[in-house]
Image (cartoon, rainbow, N blue to C red; front, side, top):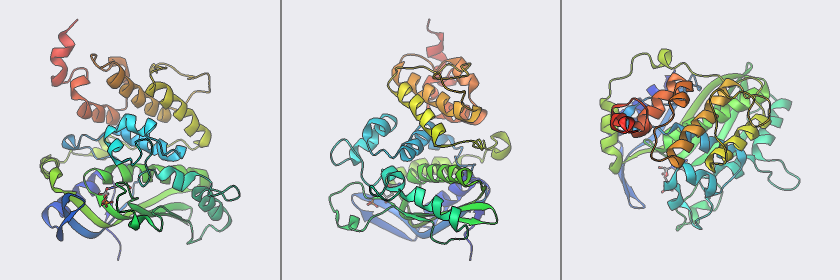
Length: 348
Ligand code: 5HM
């Protein structure tokens, strides 16, 4: 009756990839993509803070994961912010400026009208009044979207639901379709982050996260990458080596705004973030958890705006081991001390 449970997304991800790769139910061809597909795939993460797979072949872009999540929380739909971290998303925009289906922020967080709060505010308010409610649902895909034949970007998520039970906030995401290689990693990261943020706002413990997808698929163009990911030896004890960081209990919308100000300053190269910096931006100091996020935006500032240089050793040293591992595998040619940078490092 229950979906399989996993302590880490790393384990769930490998299981989904293996299943869809090896035992697909169908081969499909839609909008130019040939895919292997399994119907009705679901899993539960008992530890939703373990939201990143540590697979060298996957080359997870952890900076993009944080940027996309903050972009959702900011309620934005423009490419100015998100296109900086994922230029490929520009191809999904019909007008070259905004995203429609992929921009979940306005659908979740923007007020519905001048008199109605946004969906997230409504469900949080509902759970404060009726904790056992079964109505705390935010819908994402809209009626009418199936008729938009020419729209390259129709929402893949149907709904996000919260269930508050015995003091724990559980979350269920329901998607019409999910790309098991690319989209799954980004979506689970963002949704579990929103899950943890919401639990804090409700003063609840973090419960389980369930991800359920009608069409879980692998595009044939990605099969080589999947082969490589599955061939990687499972890094022993990922959970021990890279313990999940816990979002601070005092995290609020002000914290998110503060981090977003840093994000903008670093994206536009108007600011730099020095690891030893404590009280940043003239504000109270950010907690170490959030300083890590800002530090990752500083890494990306250097990757983009200092293209001939290695990422500064002091910045790399200030990252958690998990973030350092992810950065090293995403930008090996910029990572100090990696085999790929030995030549660059020798240059004056
Ligand atoms: O033809 P269709 O609209 O389904 O193509 C979009 C594809 O993007 C989805 O099938 C899915 O593979 C991927 N996708 C995803 O995995 C898209 C979004 C954007 O909503 C997402 N996850 N969040």
